[in-house]
Structures are given as C-alpha cells and as structure tokens.
Length: 487
Picture 1 (cartoon, rainbow, N blue to C red):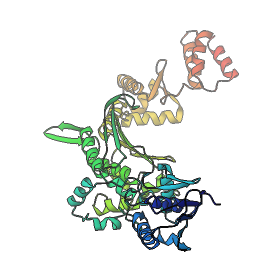
Picture 2: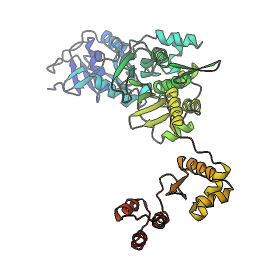
Picture 3: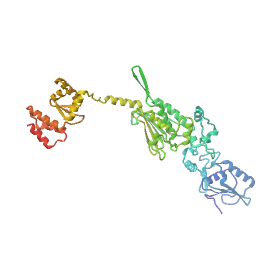
C-alpha cells in the first residue's frame, strides 16, 4: 500500500484543490497526483472519466499562471484512475490566477501537504527566475494604479496606454504580471523621500522635516517644491543696482534629486535622505557605485545606470537629457564658487553635497577683508631693502647718504617700514632687515652689545640672555664675545 509523501498526492475525486497541488509540485521538485485513490491509498475510481479528464485539463490550463501545461502529463490507468505527472517549473513562482502573486495564490510542497508560500519564499523564487535586475522582477503587489504616472506622461505628451506597459517594462513579458518598475511608478510605491532642515552644521537639531511617498513622479514634484522653499534668495545693492542670488542653483538641486531618484537601489527598503542646513544641502541615496566605477569616473560623465528601464522612462519624458550629464552640469554651475560640490560613495550609499553659494561667498569676502593688506613698497623702500639684503644692516647716516635725504625724512621712513614689518630698528640709528616671524641675527645681537659699550653703558648677563632666545645659531664663542664686549 502506498501513502502520500512529498512527491505523491491522492485525491478520490476531482476538486478545485487539485490546482493547489499542481502549483505546489511545480514550485518545488515536482511529483505525482492520483485522482481516483483515497488518502489511505485505496482505489475508489472516478465516476465519469471523460468529464473529469476534460475539466482537469482545462482547469489546469486556465487557473494557473504562468502556463504550466508543458510540465504536466496525464495518464489514464485502467479507466479508473488519472495519474498526473507534474515536473518542476522553470519560471517560478506559479500561482492561482484568481489570487495573484501573494501567499494566498502561491503554494509549495512541505512534507506530504501543500502549504502557502511565505512572502520571502515568493521573493526568492522571483529572484531565481527573473535574475538580479530588481526593476525587471515581478512584484508581489499586483493591485496597482498609475494616476500620477499617467498625469506625468500626459504632461510631457508621451503615450501611457496599457498596450505600452510591456515595452516600458511595467509588465512581465511571460505572464503579463506587473514588475518592480511598475511598483516604483505606481501610486502604491512603498519607497519614500525624506527631507530634513537643521539649525546646526552637524545636522542634529531639527528645524523642520517632511516625508513624501507615492509614485516616484509625485515624490519628485513634492520634493522639488519643498526644496524651493528652503532655497533662500539673498539681495545685495550696490549703488542703484540690485542683485538677487539664491543659496543653491535651482538646476543643481533638480539634477541632484533626479540622480537620487533614478539611480538608487530600490531593492533596499530605506528612503532617500536630503539634509539641509545653512551651509549645505546633501542628497543621500541607497546603493553605492556599480562595480568598476569610481567617483572620478562619475565626475567625468561616465554612466552605467542601475535602473536602466527607469532611466529610459525619465529620458523619454525629457526629465533627464542623457546619461552622465547631470553630475557634470552640477559642477559647471559651481565653477565660479570658492567651494565645489563633493561626491562620496560607499558600498551601499551615494552622497552629493551642494555648498550654499551665499554662505560660501560671504565667508570668502569676510576672509579677504580680515586679511591684512600687503604693504606698498615705494622706490625708496625698495632701495633700503636691497641694501639690507646685501649688507644686513645700516646706520642712520648711511640711510641718509644712500637716499640723499635729511635726518627727519630718514626717521619717518624707517618708522613706516618698521610699522609695516619690513625692517626692525635696533637700538638707536641701526636698521636690520626682518621678515615676518624671523628672529634677530647673531650679528644684530653683537652689534647692540658693542654700541652700548661704546656709549659707556654696561649690559648685564641677564639682559644678554633676554636676547639669546631670539638669536639664531648662537655658539659658545659668540656668547663669550658678547660678554667681553659688555664689560
């Protein structure tokens, strides 16, 4: 006596449950179904073989999708029992047409029974059959509407009739089921875009936040409108001319947002994140660069779209011009800005940062104003500096003789050069060339000591050591000379 197992099922008569059994076998490893044998393995026979056979074959053909008939073979045994040989299907998951791609319509074999498949099992079967291209896989959610998508296509005068769905990639070519691309464009899209405005540079203190869902077209429109509110305009008036300048170029915001929407990895359930503060606007999308690409490649215009069919739709609607131009256009808009946009990519994320042009420009102007102006070198100053470069020092008399000027003019000139940091006046009447941050030379220290001695003034060892830290490269013999000279 035979019993039911994971590869064998008995049915005493034909019922609608037979379709679940066929689906379970095709979604697993195949098996055999007997009609006309009860659960205990006893032959009961079929009341009307011809009618049962016709209902069976027609029902399996019409009630199950995708088409499973090529994996099913019927054998009539002794005109009492119908043997149904079911092979493993090649385009899983198979499901009840009336239920769709959800657990209520998808069955798998588990031991001697047929049970509903879990959502995870359904997704894995779809991935195994459709490949790893997310937008081309069949979506589990099949009850979709396209009001926003239809409005967008109409706005840009592109046909969006249902007979175009397969060509656009919204329906699967094998069974007509909606794809993940259709889900992304539909009003039931489960992915969202989150925008947060912060008070601080580190983006921790919220000022406002929004989350936009629905069709990707609706998210694009709502996000653009909200970011426009965050894009302040600064007005400057010079004379009678008024100049208005926005924090961010509108086209740069648009391109960065489109890049995030079109090229993100939709197999992740997370949201697109847009952070705004007073200095920058950053766009963070899930999914790093495709293998073989670098951020430098992206800046050069190299493009390898992750979601090819989605990019083609946006291209057809003229929302993007061509692949690879958006990032280059952003940098072009910032070519005159002191701070350039930045691009960063990790394994699972991609970020574009747009600097606030008004904040950056104001910072650059303030820095320029704070920077001390370079001293103006007059012809007389140039002569003095050239002399000091060659000889290292000069006295008042030498300066007057060099420039053919009187003592008062020499005094005013040396004071001006000293105040501007060009020279240093050492003692009385002795000038030594100096540059910013340079220390007096050993020669200058020796000279001070000698001049003070000549004037009858003594210098103590303590006073001398106040000079030593400012002298460069002093040696023991220099110190001895200073000490002798000051005695």
